[in-house]
Image 1: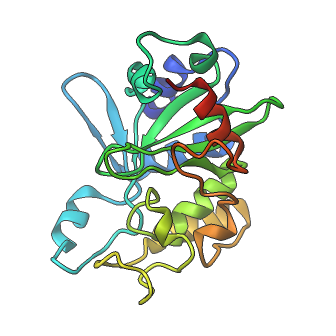
Image 2: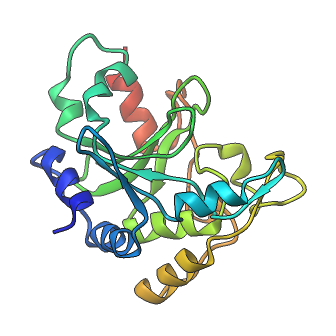
Amino acid sequence: MGKLLEQLKAVLPEKLWVPDELAQLYQWIEQQGYYEDYDDGHRTGFLYPADKLEESWTDDERQGGTIILFNANRNDGLRYWFGLEEDSPEICQRLCVFARTGAEGSEAALWLDDDGKLKIVHMGSGSGSILSCVLADNMVDFLRLLAIGYDEICWNEEFPYPPNDEQSDSGMHIHPNVEFQQWVQKTFNTTIPATALDIVKHPAEMGDRDSEDAFCRWAEKQSN
C-alpha cells in the first residue's frame, strides 16, 4: 500500500471507504514520483511534477492543467468550517477531506449522503471560493472533472466555459496536463467533458439553504 492511501485510510471514518479509482490515482501519482514528503511525516501528491510547474509559470501562462494537492492531514479543522466549537459526530462520521482544491484553502472531501452513497464534495474556504456542493457523484467523474484542465476547481464562475475561454476571467492560460488526461481516458475507458457543468450538477454556494444540491443543504443544517 502506498503512503498516500495509507494516510487517507488512517483518518477515514468507519462508515466511509476509499473508492478503487482514488486508490488507483494514488498509485499512479506515486509511480510517477509526483509527491513531496514533509518533515511532519505527511506526503502530498500532485498531478504534475512541481518543479516543471514552477519552471513553466509566467505572468500569463503555465503548464500542468488543474492544480490540486492530495493529502490527509486537514480533517482536524472540520468543526471550524462549520462554525462549531467542538466536533460533531454527525459531521465526523460522514465527511473526510482528502485534497486541497484552491490556494486560498478550499478543499475536496468524501461525503456519505443520506442514502448511503459516497459523493465527492467541495468545501470553499469562505475567504475566497464559497463553492459548497457535490462536485461528482462518483470518483471517475471527479477525475474527469480534474482532467478538463481548469486552473483550480474551486471557482464555479468558470464552470460554464472550457478552460482558457475568452468569456472567462482567469487571466491565465493553462496548458493541459496531457499525461493525466490520457491516463484517465485509458484507465477508465471514458471521455473528458468540455466544461465542469457537464459533471457538477448544482454548483451551490455557502448560505444557500434552498439549493438543489444535497451537500449544500446538509452543510447548512450542520453549520452554526
